[in-house]
Length: 624
Image (tube, rainbow, N blue to C red; front, side):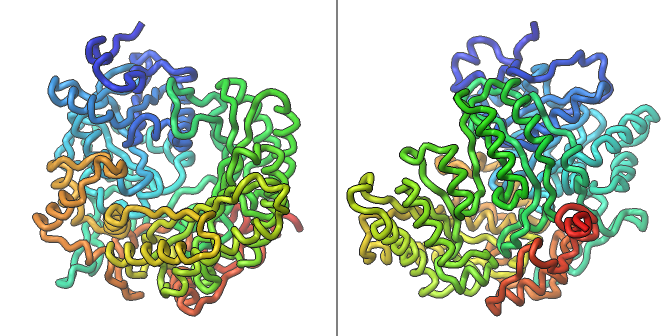
């Protein structure tokens, strides 16, 4: 039996101690003396959040299929254990072996959202790994980052040895083989990092240096030699069906955010919403074959004992074999107590029919995202959804027995007017009105409940809105007040509810979303002054962040409310995600004119992703 890193007294003194003991069903144990590489996979948030992340489950399974590699896991310890580890000088440890993270060859950190950045420093600090990459030797792991935030890795550049740009299934084997060979040859750590920069998809920040103009914008990005790649091309899985997928995912001890089997049915999205980074960086859209998904669903439910399966994608309604897959799941698991979850569906007749078969409409609510209240703004963002679509979908839902609808909108979109803002509640009211028009009084199960929620718009890299200015916190809150006041004036106000996000948190997200390498100093200062778990409201201290910006001599407004010129050099311009800058510029201009772009299946927009010659880009050719 393995020895736990924490003694019984400590485990009894902290909350949810099962977060830290490992040994879950389907976790992998190996003899550490019989492997060449030890890889610790990290999600820099609490266990319940990290265990819900599909990407780590995929890489964990992929690495552990290698006989020479043992992949383990670590998550951010909650504040109570954080305090104990610091007081007792106990190094942070991996779950499977309970060995210190600092003893591993690699520490791979998934960077899913900007508000986890201070927790990355917490992981390094508690692991007793130098925070600054330049201070590390072969005595420390190679720290590598992956995930969507690596499409602008610069605010974290000083803390990472490597970044993996793109989908992890393609190049890790090559990187690990390079590591094994160079360690056997006794190569210097810097020599390894330089060699790693030639592995496609790998970015080594120490080999690049931004050169700034007097106004704070970037003049150019200087490379440390002609052999250093000028462009880092994202990695993309060509054969999604044949790619590694975990048939025995780890089953957590306690309830986590997504306590279910997750079946990824496709990657990418054909829709082209101009605010959506995922819809751009995961192009082209690729599907998994339905036969593989059917087999995986049966195997995963059997190997985990879960009672729910969720079909995961950016837009499940666009999966071409959805009807066949859902029909199979309904028939296969009928009477077996298995729930089927279908997020990311468009509200149309087919989707509603499917949901009525897998949901208890008396208990569930429908969720869909118009994103903007007015048709004008939906055209600006290229949502591809008309008011008629929304109202007809709502009417069919009400006729089908639903009386609760959740609507998601954004405030602060480029070109937004007061009238556009007011339309959020006008539309919500018209949806409520449909309920009372469509459902006879004797068939109603109480009043309908329409809950409108607004997040605040944050421009993201590799989207047409990457040039757009962001609202100030005051402007965001003023707009939220307009929505709230409009709700009070609506005829069906008793059926309406309204929620909105934290404006200060949004501002910080906006800073790091499009920030540059100078923000490393701010991040380090904020962490040293106590910032951690920033995405958790009770631990977010905006005043501390403001003080850090002031001490570092940087302005938040420079990164948020300033409109970028079309020829500005972005911190991420050395990365290629397949979607060309020329296409993004065209879309930015079309947004200003309120023009829509057809989805990828209706018409190719020439975004550049066809260079990969996969997925939706060649569907027509395959059909012929």
